Length: 59
Image (cartoon, rainbow, N blue to C red; front, side, top):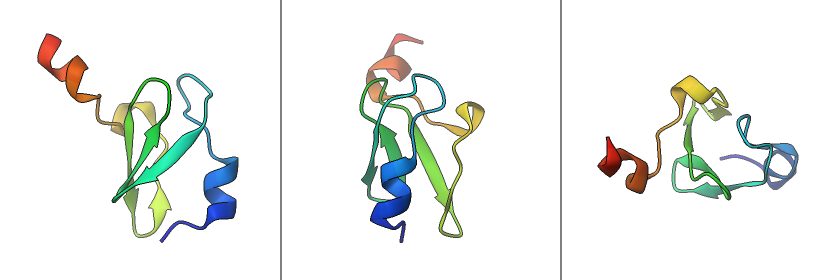
């Protein structure tokens, strides 16, 4: 589980805004990218993020 203290200092690497914990992903509050958590470590790499559902439909 990701601690609240860690979540408070994390930001989306793309848009530099706040993130929130949503199930097993960290989600950007602005762009909606979903960053995975592997072995309780957030993987905050743009290339590893899942695009929001509305962006997937456009492609």
